[in-house]
Length: 518
Image (tube, rainbow, N blue to C red; front, side, top):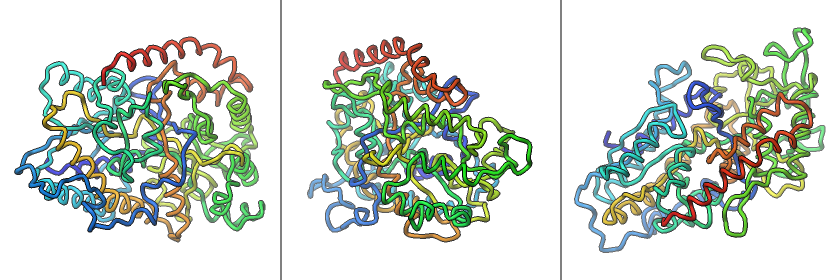
């Protein structure tokens, strides 16, 4: 393939073709993989795609990138290779909702980004994609490690999943991107990148190239018709759920109470099932997602900038206990998709599509799945724990999200080209690809409104992964998720059973970073 961003578009399409279970691990591959995560310190003031900051002055540099010297003459038609992870890439025809006419608009924007960068740098971009559902030590990771040992790699940068990137970083095989690119440029995802930085070093990052990481971000999709019928926002003194988000009144208690209000045991069998009118359709990891949307990190950075286990605190305990109680409340109205899996579909998700569920708590990629529903829908950020929280926080799945990294075996003489390629491609993608992706994401709404785009901007600006999930220390994330079906109030005992092992694994990773020369 000679068009790299065309591949990025293919990766984007692949993520959009995921079932809504894309937010969770593939149970047939690595055991106990999951992909939910966010950072508590996100700020809505730094935007990758806001309506104001997305406008570029093309007369100043290349879509805002001014790093190329005036006397630059290009690279003489040089071929540049890139290695990417083609996450769950499948033939588009296998997706029953695939619409080539509509999907092609993203492909077209991506191809245009590539063409412009190829012309600017006088290069030809070739991509090699590794198609695999395996993570954490899978074929992509092994390929990069083998290339490092044999010194045979020709690619200039890589786009792994976050779990693979974390392994490569701790192995000392990735450059600190702060030494190569300017991560303060607006096309680099500041909140995301800050959340993966350890001891001041950012070994992998997200930018406007990595649209897959946007699609892997958690959100809440809501049925506008049900919300209007029950006047749910008005019951709290607001005109809409969007206004509640703006006023920081969109909290987990509110979502739980609204779910209880509309739940009805339609088939009168005294249990929540896909035939009922439900409040929330979610997945097994829902308690972990709520923890992250409540602004709680499993690990935080100490004074040296290294991670330490800090999730056992008053806020986390209160949040998890409340989430457990709601998840196990027969009158709560929450249906879990993992409990109703069938071949190729999810009856629990179908409940939302059929207009009998208020909220779908899932990744943004699920918007492609719900586009067939007759009722109009909108999108919201994940709810805060309470109104004392500074910002909304939206989980990015380490299992599906991609990122950008530069292996340490890239030759010194190729680093200048790598920098120009990454910065220029991200700059033009911010202007052309991200905007197109957001418009494409919402085009299936019946009533497209400014509030929906504003919500997507907010989600994009407050999306961050979690170090604990990426590095898989002690299976703490999965232990928290499993509390959905555990005895009420058992978080502390579950934590105490694995905290020593988790701390040992964190300390081992920290030692690896301290001993690395990168």
